[in-house]
Length: 85
Image (cartoon, rainbow, N blue to C red; front, side, top):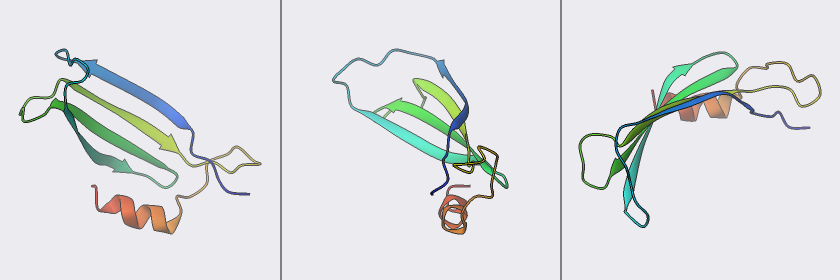
């Protein structure tokens, strides 16, 4: 069976309001690429604004489906995520 990627940690800091249906832009970067985990950083911006309305991040840990223990990131993931470092 395929491995799973549960979210181990998540957080967000809000600086200003956004209102539906306001257009937003989201920036995503990899902050840390570990052996079995990846830490993402993101910013949510009102379209065209330089300062984020919210900043956050989350950590994914790749675990074996049966063992539920951390396993190494798949090579294809590591290759793709490296471009976001």
